[in-house]
Length: 444
Image (cartoon, rainbow, N blue to C red; front, side):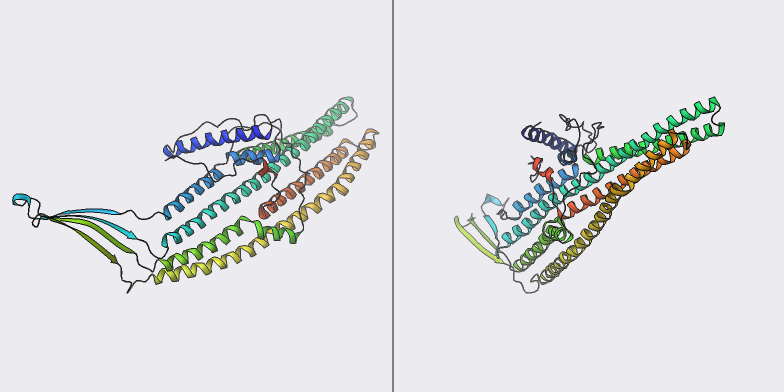
């Protein structure tokens, strides 16, 4: 499937999801069928595929996109001028001859002074930028979560494969020991011991199989998919991303991280809200104009009026002080986010380095020695120098070493996913994503 077809399918899925969200907003108990098969055309699922499908289907991202629409509406509303008011006063209704009163028609219009409308628009625009930044941050959060669950699933299935291999070996050894026991070359306790090892291995395999099944269901749920996905996962644990050094990662996080962006937007919003509060200290004018018809005098005149509040007591000073304090608080929050982010990057980098060193040690030292030990033990067993228990122990050491290596790889991928989320870098899935828009247009 080429990118053009994929983008077309993506928009089709997105349109159907919008219809489901609109239906659910009217009927909260509505349970839609899943919109199509996002996995159509795929023979395997790579990490980028999983992230792309999650971004198309995840309700949290759609919710964030709708919040952009909501913020856009508030920007429009903030800049609208107040509607004029039409009033009609008729005096003397019901008097004899119906000619003893006056009819007054008046149009009143509030005239906004101090650029308050524009100031209000600027505050709403800051909220819109915050909503857009939140959507971008949600993309990275979803991608990071999918990466962790994806590699947790890969690791669980790798562990299941290793334990399954050990189970096959235990079955083979049980057959060999049973044959020896039948021939009198082994004792009945030897057969019972081999049977016990087989049962223990089977129990362990069932537990690991359940863990692998739960990991895949967790991945499906995180993707936003309600059905079962049986396609194999193609991205390997040893496909390591290229990351810079700690200083580069911290600099990237401080420049690009969504929390930093939102904290900066919060500072700007507080500044604009402070300016709006000061503008609101200026009272607005109320102008009115309209004809007055007198039945008594049989004449028509025009009334013109202008009114303004006199700011003797309330000059909005409390709100101005409050907004000033919020402005200072937002600046302090920005610095707090920067410090917090640097700490998180340092912690994730330490976890990444620790896992990477463990992976290198397993690959270069532990696994080669375990394999060599198994090879020598198998030769000794075949020549009759060692019993089957020694061979099984050697095989178990290999499996445990492989599983420990898998665990280290999983920790490495989790740490790498966290670093990508914190630095908001290395995102090839964004190239194939067609949902990078500010929400769907919703009809009222």
